[in-house]
Length: 353
Ligand code: F0G
Image 1: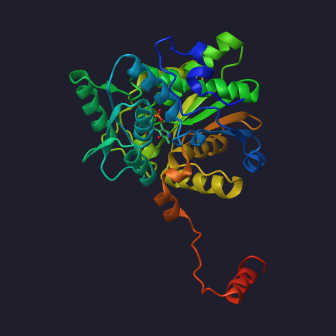
Image 2 (image 1 turned 180 degrees about the horizontal axis):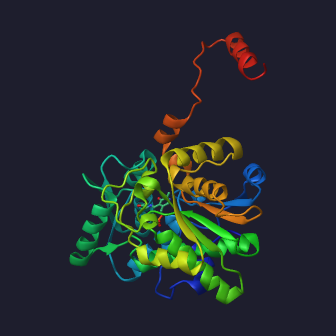
Image 3 (image 1 turned 90 degrees about the vertical axis):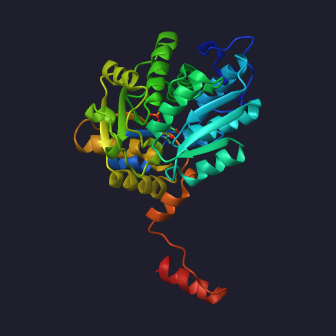
């Protein structure tokens, strides 16, 4: 059967009614892949939820389909968001699909190229400011209060409603919740949405509750240190955020679930990014790999025990950020003449020696 998309598949769990348009790009239903090598090497049972398999290449599609459908239902003609890139790609795509205008405000020079290309192709009005995400978010919150424009950042509660469906899928795919859900944290909407989803599924289906482990980049680790980072900095531009909007919800998720926040350095993120791609064939963007880097750190310092069943959320597709991939890869193309003999000799020397 053809997967109908989230609003249809999970309508009993979502604020969907007769007036809600049947908006979809057939988002959701993403793979849960077992990381065979890493599970063995680290002596755990480690799975990744491949959110980069969504239509615009990130988990943002789950929340955006809901938020944009509700904007249409409410008669809105225009949506707006601040973004480190993925939210803007999803907003622009679903606005195009629904026939709405889309305005995005992004931090100049700090958004990955693939994400910018998406917003351009989907036809959004793109405003690039000399400021960071937190400043952009503050701006769009005020604008949406004054102008007839719907805010579709995750402070819009419909975003978290859509995003909670990922927790339902994890439970269905594993047969129950895992022991630990490891997730990168930026603006802190997604960890809050997963926790809401796990709790709702537990009530309806009797599934367990996982412990929520949220990982931030060390240069943008507001929740770890319980203070705002005025100038957040990290190679993982998607989570380059110093003052998470869903701060309180995320803290509750971690406290209620007996989980933890921790931070990972850019070096740890890049190491996980490369290892995941080269040893598992799984290419996720740097911010996503904060979850894998975090799991590794927690295993080393004893916060995660051997034998634990873990689901790490890979929030975005590796293709989103080709620059970071190329800059950090040790593999470089070898340039040779258009000559079979030369190519064969090279292969024998490098691969078959
Ligand atoms: N991973 C990726 C790939 C992201 O794009 C984001 C957030 C996160 C993790 C963190 O999720 O904010 O719910 O804690 N990106 C937002 C954006 C901020 O504008 O695309 P969060």
